[in-house]
Image (cartoon, rainbow, N blue to C red):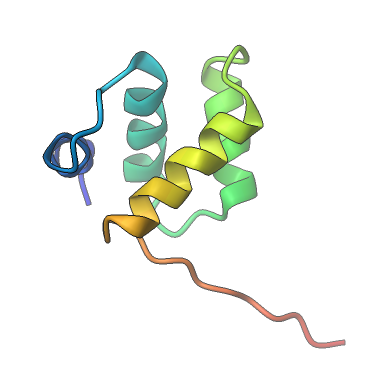
Length: 77
Protein backbone atom coordinates (compact mmCIF):
# COMPACT_ATOMS: atom_id res chain seq x y z
CA UNK A 1 0.00 0.00 0.00
CA UNK A 2 1.33 3.45 -0.86
CA UNK A 3 1.78 6.24 1.64
CA UNK A 4 -0.96 8.21 -0.15
CA UNK A 5 -3.40 5.35 0.41
CA UNK A 6 -2.42 5.14 4.07
CA UNK A 7 -2.88 8.91 4.51
CA UNK A 8 -6.27 8.77 2.76
CA UNK A 9 -7.41 5.93 5.04
CA UNK A 10 -6.30 7.89 8.12
CA UNK A 11 -8.17 11.00 6.95
CA UNK A 12 -11.27 8.92 6.21
CA UNK A 13 -11.23 7.60 9.76
CA UNK A 14 -11.10 11.16 11.13
CA UNK A 15 -7.42 11.29 12.07
CA UNK A 16 -5.32 14.41 11.68
CA UNK A 17 -2.24 13.96 9.54
CA UNK A 18 0.67 15.03 11.69
CA UNK A 19 4.33 15.06 10.72
CA UNK A 20 4.87 11.95 12.83
CA UNK A 21 1.95 10.04 11.27
CA UNK A 22 3.11 10.95 7.78
CA UNK A 23 6.62 9.73 8.55
CA UNK A 24 5.34 6.42 9.96
CA UNK A 25 3.10 6.01 6.89
CA UNK A 26 6.08 6.64 4.62
CA UNK A 27 8.20 4.06 6.45
CA UNK A 28 5.43 1.45 6.34
CA UNK A 29 4.87 2.06 2.63
CA UNK A 30 8.61 1.76 1.91
CA UNK A 31 9.09 -1.40 4.01
CA UNK A 32 6.26 -3.77 3.16
CA UNK A 33 6.23 -6.70 5.56
CA UNK A 34 8.56 -5.11 8.11
CA UNK A 35 8.13 -5.99 11.76
CA UNK A 36 6.96 -3.41 14.30
CA UNK A 37 10.46 -3.34 15.72
CA UNK A 38 11.93 -2.67 12.27
CA UNK A 39 9.40 0.08 11.60
CA UNK A 40 10.38 1.74 14.90
CA UNK A 41 14.05 1.49 13.94
CA UNK A 42 13.50 3.08 10.52
CA UNK A 43 11.30 5.84 11.93
CA UNK A 44 13.83 6.68 14.66
CA UNK A 45 16.61 6.65 12.07
CA UNK A 46 14.74 9.37 10.14
CA UNK A 47 13.57 11.35 13.21
CA UNK A 48 14.79 10.30 16.64
CA UNK A 49 12.35 12.66 18.36
CA UNK A 50 9.47 10.27 17.55
CA UNK A 51 8.93 7.88 20.44
CA UNK A 52 8.44 4.15 20.24
CA UNK A 53 4.97 4.46 21.79
CA UNK A 54 3.93 6.87 19.02
CA UNK A 55 4.98 4.37 16.36
CA UNK A 56 3.20 1.47 18.05
CA UNK A 57 0.01 3.54 18.50
CA UNK A 58 0.06 4.42 14.82
CA UNK A 59 0.55 0.77 13.86
CA UNK A 60 -2.38 -0.20 16.11
CA UNK A 61 -4.60 2.47 14.53
CA UNK A 62 -3.68 1.25 11.05
CA UNK A 63 -4.57 -2.31 12.10
CA UNK A 64 -7.90 -1.16 13.55
CA UNK A 65 -8.93 0.66 10.35
CA UNK A 66 -7.87 -2.28 8.20
CA UNK A 67 -4.90 -0.71 6.43
CA UNK A 68 -2.36 -3.25 7.65
CA UNK A 69 -2.54 -6.77 9.05
CA UNK A 70 -0.46 -8.12 11.90
CA UNK A 71 1.28 -11.40 11.28
CA UNK A 72 2.37 -13.24 14.40
CA UNK A 73 5.50 -15.30 13.89
CA UNK A 74 6.25 -18.20 16.18
CA UNK A 75 9.85 -19.28 16.37
CA UNK A 76 10.40 -22.98 16.90
CA UNK A 77 13.50 -24.18 18.70
